[in-house]
Each structure stands twice: as C-alpha cells, then as structure tokens.
Amino acid sequence: MFQPVKIAPSILSADFMNLQRDIEAIQAGGAGYVHVDVMDGHFVPNLTMGVPVVKQLKKITDMPLDVHLMISNPLEQLPWFLEAGADIVTVHAEAAAGYQLERAVEMIHAAGAKAAASVKPHTPVEVLAPVMAQLDMVLIMSVEPGFSGQSYIEGSERKVARTVELARAVGAAPLIEVDGGIGVKTAPLVAAAGADVLVCGSAVCGADDSAAAIAQVTQAAEAARAAALASKEA
Ligand code: DX5
Ligand code: ZN
Image (tube, rainbow, N blue to C red; front, side, top):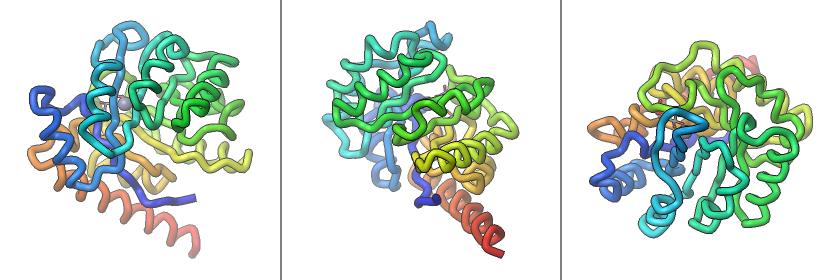
C-alpha cells in the first residue's frame, strides 16, 4: 500500500513574477509534481490560473503537472487542459456528478493522462466508489477549496484511512493525495494514514527556502509512516 511520499508544491503560493525561478527551486529540492490550482470564481470563490499557464509550465519543467480543477464545468474544459499538457488531472465529484465523473475519467485516460477525483471536506469519499477502480489518484481536501494558507481540518486523516479501505475493497491502489494546510506538523498525520502525495502551498512555495521545506516535510512524513508500519507489524 505505501509508496515513497512525494511532495506536490502548489504554485498558488509561488511568486508569479518569478515563477520559473520558483519552479526550478522546487525541482532542485526534489518535488515530485507541480500542483496547479485552477479556480473559476464559481465552483470556488477565488479565481486563479488556467490553460495558458499550464501550457507555459509544460515548456519549462519536466516535473509532472498535477492539475487540480476547481471549476464548475470540468467536462467542457478538460480537453483544453489535456491538450495543454496536464499529466494528472483532478476533477471534483461535486462538479461532475454520477455519469459525468465516469466520462471525465474516460476522457483523461483517452488523452494518455492520469485521472484523479477529489472530494471537499464535507463530501463523503464513498461518492467516488463507482470510479474508484479506474482512478490513478484520489485527492482528499483537508481544507475547503478556494484559498491557500488555511488551517488543516482536524480529523481529515480519518478520511485518508477510509479511502485506503475503500480502494482496497475493490482491489485498487490509487495514489492518495492530501491538499490543504499540510506542513511539518500535519504531514505525519496523513502520511501515517496512507497518504502518498502531499500538496504544500504556503509550507513550501511560501517558504524562504522551498528545498529545505520539502526536505523537512518529507522527513516528517516518512518518519510517521515508518512508525505506523512498524506498529502494524508489531
Ligand atoms: C486550496 C488549494 C490548495 C492550496 C494549498 O483550494 O487546492 O492546493 O493552494 O495551500 P496550503 O498548503 O497553503 O493550504
Ligand atoms: Zn489544490
């Protein structure tokens, strides 16, 4: 079940006037992905970046682009993001109910990208059951989507553990990503519960030394995970 923990720094907390510099810093620091928060001012109150930014990022980095779509009409915009070079695309269950979520996963896979689905803090992860076996990744939100710099919602690690169980029940092993308020204090909680990918906005891209921050969060997460594994085996 456990794979090495990877950090996905969210560029929402980067310096947009020096984005290439910040991307190079996280790459040198060992980031696993670049997390791109796409917000439309409708699904969430905030408005951030879109297709042109993904296209430009693709030109300057080899790190996989982990595109988190917080938009109301994912099916309409998906082809654009896939064409722009998104490597992993996350669609929210709240924006793509029932059949639409299945369709989104099919479209993403048909383009050769990896498909992920996300749930907001108040949406039970069980809504992902119909597509769980097809997903490459599940994104558990540990804050209400919309803004970086919020505090981790206590108990979110229980949802991570529940996701591991749900996936296992259908013989699937998607990566589990957690997004919102993740840093040295909270990374151990979610890593011990089974998280594989940690999105870090303010804790990494907002830090003075993003490479050092990646190392610290990774170390804290790996230590907690090793302890959790050891206690299971004991
Ligand atoms: C929130 C975004 C997050 C956010 C994370 O809606 O999806 O990716 O940028 O920022 P921090 O790590 O500061 O909570
Ligand atoms: Zn995000």
